[in-house]
Amino acid sequence: MNHPNEVITEIQGRVGLITLNRPTALNALNLPMIRALTQSLLAWRDDDRVQAVAVRGSNKAGPFGAFCAGGDIRYFHQAMLGGDPSTEDFFTEEYTLNHLVHRYPKPYIAFMDGVVMGGGMGISQGASHRLVTERSKLAMPETLIGLFPDVAGGYFLSRCPGSTGEWLALTGTTVRAGDAIALGLADHCLPVDTLPQAWAALAGLQSLDSASIDRWITTYSVAATADESRARGQIDHYFAKDSVAAIVQALEADASDWARHNAALLRQRSPLMLHVALEQIRRARHLTVAQDLRMERDMVRHAFFPRHLGRSAVHTETAEGIRALVIDKDYAPRWNPACIENVTEDMVLPFFDSPWCAHSHPLRALD
Image (cartoon, rainbow, N blue to C red; front, side, top):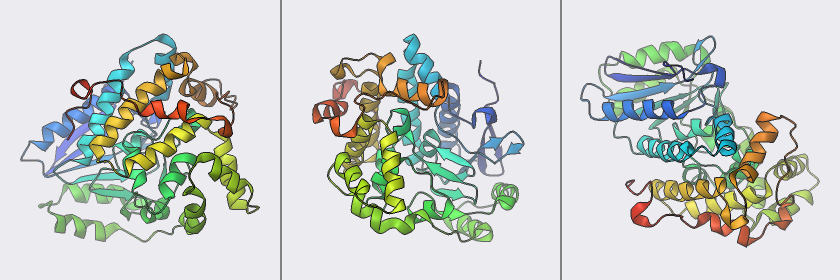
């Protein structure tokens, strides 16, 4: 049962305001939430009264505190086990929403406070203004649950500097405010204690042109320190290598704490989906956001129904990853193949074959 107020929308002044209100699930997106967001954004896009849109999350204490932890992965697991076809609609409509955010013609301001992962990145990375705080935690951790960084993850991660996109996609590393800004995943940092005031002041602006929004941001923004991205030299050295096997073997030959830590992260993740994600990021560098989302729609169909591997949805990497991490919580996924070195091109490349003709692709209308 979905709570009727999981997405709260209102217009104040000249701003359309959205609050994600599913705090017990860290605002994880379900299909009704995706539809509510899409409906509001489409209505406001064509409403002259609305000059800008702002979106925030909420926690159990009220607004802010958490943005969005991703898609509802418990639902994915139940759907896979039960043969529920509604996941087809979920991904088609979520990726359509992601594209709408990336191409939104009005200022779209994302208050990325707290956890911002997976689907939360999907509704914030296309924003014209991406605001983080000292408690923001950004990540695309999908390889840990046997998936890949979707919701246009290929597009925005591949545009991070150097090989940091590969690093983030494969390891699922969580970055804080300063690193998010340094890596091109956020624009400004606002102190947590100023968020209610900043939100109210935005709604009170008489003009929402770029100069007015810039002045509003300047009033509240502060500097943020980057920590993880200080390892840029190491990231670019290792994560530019040709294959996942080459990356992890080189890391394991390095005795530094940083290298050992990153090698250990890779060894925990689905070997198959690490290879798929690396291929995804490198292909996406040459794609538009619409092309990337069509590619990811193909990939997610194969992730749930990998017929080329002779598997059903119940026996996929995604079903196993969610089982181990979220359902049984034994944190001991039985990946297949179990080892990075045993993944072959024949297992990986079919993920990029579209199961649809161009004229019948579910995202054919994206431009």
